[in-house]
Each structure stands twice: as structure tokens, then as C-alpha cells.
Image (cartoon, rainbow, N blue to C red; front, side, top):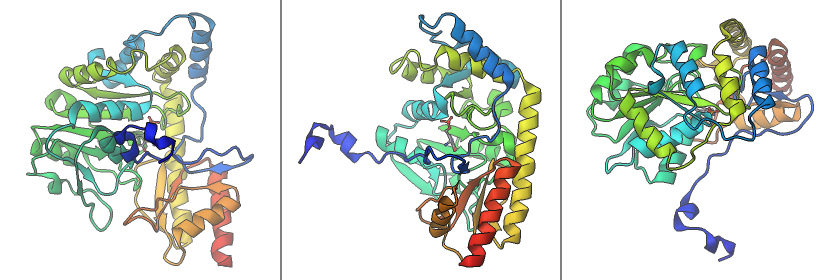
Length: 357
Ligand code: PMP
């Protein structure tokens, strides 16, 4: 054995998540990581510049109080019901550690955000996969009546984009009252109803949000969990056993400002939704099957063209989309919704490639 002998046995067993590539290629049409094609609000930039001018020699507020208050105000919560973190990936990791390490298994859809299973391996959490149906939709009835360590659902789901109504989430919460039901709402602002208003009634509900998508702040790394106080307290215990200062001063200032500019949020959100609907029609005209999406991406497959090959050909044209070599979805492409110009470039390249092949 080589230098891997330095690794602890747990590290040898890890299967790390592989993020979509971020290559430094000029004029790239980057539709592979579900970033927002529009920049954040100018108020965010101003708040970050202001925060940079004073206090960087000091540690940030370990409780992220101002950010908690901004999020709480926006969502009608108490600041104590909000737990911010360094991207929602970190918040999710802490939640998996805090709530799902049990002798029972965690229930996950078989098609969902692949990072969930990475956390399970990291923390030794047993998983039971619950199949999505033939149309790749989550059927909440199939989560009922199984003793579980917890349930994790993304709404809208990734990478399918499928959104579930709040009634389905509520059914899930009622069918699993003895464990935490985590609803990851990374994409909720693009086409689903948030479960945050249910928090007051369900002590087992934890909702996770990110500022990477609808708030255009993927580069800042901010997300949060919302839930009743006892759940937030558990997350604080984990965080304070890991890193006192997960968010820097610039991240907190920028993130808080993002919640103040509602006009910018609405404009960019509506622009993305309009582009998504237009792109879905264009893809459909090129014979793609396109799943209905409530997210800032489309999940689509072509009856005559292998998805992996198509992604590789698009890359040669300077267009990145995401392909997952996973059972049930390996003939699909996940296409992030770009600006109108980016979507046009994609459709143009596809038209060419489909005609040539
Ligand atoms: N949840 C889902 C469903 C996602 O697709 C992503 C983005 N890859 C995240 C969480 C993580 O987002 P971030 O860490 O940027 O907040």
C-alpha cells in the first residue's frame, strides 16, 4: 500500500461528491451547475464593500445574528428558528449528523441530490432508497409506515426539477411524526410552495434553503435551515463542535442585503422562469422529452441520442450541461436555465448536432 496507509479506515471508504466542473474557458456557456445567470443585487455588492472597509481583523459574529434576523424577517420566523451555514451543503451535513445517525435507516428517493448519500457514508448512516415512479416523481405514500431515522426530500427534486404540492409534504410529515423530515428547498423560488409556513405546526420539519440559486450568490456560500427551536439547537450543538465561525463578515453582510432587495429578487426570478418555459418549448420542438420543472434547470432526454455523447459534443461547442451516469437517469441531461442568449446558443448547437448525427 502507498501513502494511503496514512488514511483512517473511514476515509478509505468515502465516496466523495463530484461537483460540476468550473473550467476556465473563455466564452463558455455554463449550464452545468444551476447557478443563476444574473448577478446579485447591487445592494449586495455595496453591503459587501462596506463590510470589507472595517473589521476584517476581527472574527465575525459566531451566531450570525444580523443574517438570522434578516432571514427571519423575510420568512415570518423568529431569529432563533434560523440556522445559517457556509452554503446549504454545510447545513445539510450538520443536519445529517444531528438527526439521522440512528440504528434505523434514513429514507431517500432513489433519484435525488447525490450529496445526501455522500453524507450518509461520511457519518455511517444507513439508507433505504424509496423509488420514484415511472415519471421520476416522488410518491409520498411510499414513505408511510416504515420506521425510519428520518426522511430527506428535495422540493423541487434534483436533478429532475419535479415539484410537489404542500399537501404532499404535509402528508409526509404526518406519516412520519417520530423522525425529522428534511425538505431541501434549494430551488423552491423557481416554482414550488415553501414548507416554511408549516414549521409552526410540525416539530419534526426542517426546511433548508440556499442563497446560491434564486439569490445569485453561489460564490458567497450561504444557506440556512429553518425549524422549531429544538431542531435549531441541535444544529448549533454540531456547528459549535466543528467551526465557531462558518460564515465570514462579507458573506453575512452580502447575504443579509440580498433579503432587502425584493425587486431584484422578483425580476431575476421571473426572468429565469420565463427562460425556462421558452427553453422547454424549444427542446420539445427538437424532439426532447422534457420533464415539467419547478426549478432553474430542465431535465430532458432525446429518443435517438445518447445523453453522455450529446453532453460531450456540446462541450466541444463550448456549452456545458450536466450528465449523471446513474441508474434510471443516464439518458437525461440536466440543463441549467441561462440568459436568453445562452439558451439560444444551446438550442442552436443542439440543432446542429442533432442534424449531423
Ligand atoms: N441542495 C440541492 C438540491 C442542490 O442541488 C444544491 C446545489 N448543488 C445544494 C443543496 C447545495 O447548495 P449550496 O451548498 O450552494 O447552498
